[in-house]
Length: 428
Length: 156
Image 1 (cartoon, rainbow over the protein chains, first blue to last red):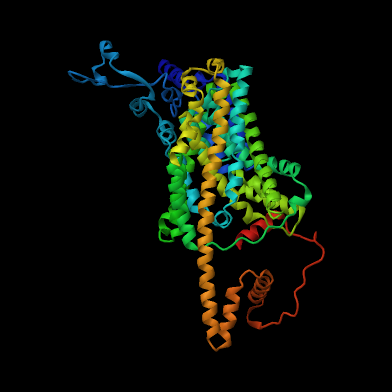
Image 2 (spheres, chains in turn yellow, cyan):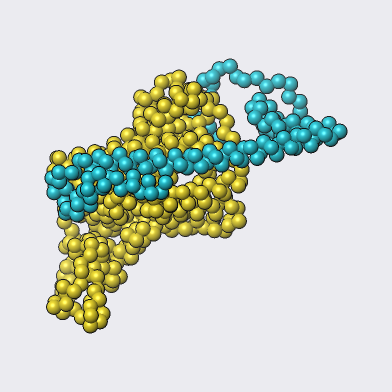
């Protein structure tokens, strides 16, 4: 009997119930809300579901799957070894007397992560080391047809204008510091929140994992939620900023783009962008690599892998680990609420900037460009382009803007990656 | 040009004498906000950021506009060459082909060809004659949803 009770007591002591506090419970309930959004409402379910499950796993106590403290330089610092005259001193010398010979850097001790980390810690290495987002871009590149953009290069302008939301929100996040709530946002945090306006999940994760990893969970949830809500958020802004006459403009047929042009495009974009903003190369370069594989027509097997298996595997790893970063201490704060509000502002301003530049182009082109295609510049491929098509068709059912909107749409992907590169080069 | 761009990228820092680096080194948002150059640096950063994005995409526009122009002129000269070769030949058939190649932008003819092909695919080998194609006058008679139409368009 004694053995039974002691075993039972041991089981209870090591069970998750003992480590459960109210914050964990709230986070677990929040993950249920995300399950609902992913399964019932189908908000970007391919990513939202893994994110929600990662959030659930990380907030179940004592599972040891993910350790937030291992990913914080303050609790897991890396001491860089120093060379001294007498030879190389390793960390193993250990004695306090040598401690001063090691310079503490802001980076992490990855050795400790490998020794003490759980499953999700191991998978999170791919986010922390910026491996997953570029690989997702490889898949996106191998699925994207840049033909509409090559046929109408002016679309690049709309893709650039829609990035206005990012920089506007950057200022907005800095302004919020006056409230002092949640400790405010540092410059790096403000930039990470602002990138939500790029409407590009991998780019947002890429930038945030470099600048403000502590906000990764909330920023990823906000970014993917708003991307799923593009058909709800954008139409009212588009209608508000355009007249019926502007919305009903029918655009001329796009010219046919030759295969050589499609092959030159990824190479030229990689060279030009990487030379000007090298920090954008991991995203833009890999995106274009995927596209070159597709357009060259000689790498069918690789293209199939990039589009399907690789993309799917990375999506699972990315989603579940990003969700795992949403631990209660990081997520349950004023910052998360501000991130959600600022993310929405970023989306709305980005859409408005695109439409407004579209209006300008409508005037300059002599009423040949439909301003509705400007809203597609926020990326969110191909959802934003479909919204342009839908709103255009509501005004004039025989109007087909889809292919015209795909130009700014894919330009937006390049634009947001460039914007991330610019922010990284200044703040990284 | 690259130097000019690097200067532009670093202008935020240059304008405020390394202020961004100094502000970033401060540990929290409150102390960053208290820095005297905070708003100047943040404003310049946002402005520089959007300008650089526009600049890079403008360079890409120029490049691909140039590429498009070159390829269009190559296509045009090829089409002209074919047309002139066809015109030299005596048979009427190649001449007819040449006309089609030289005027690919005739929307109506393309539309008629597409409709004919669709009917041919639908009817099979039976043979048919199209006497006239008329546009429906009631503009709002679209039965399919915009999403459905988008799906169909994407198949083209």
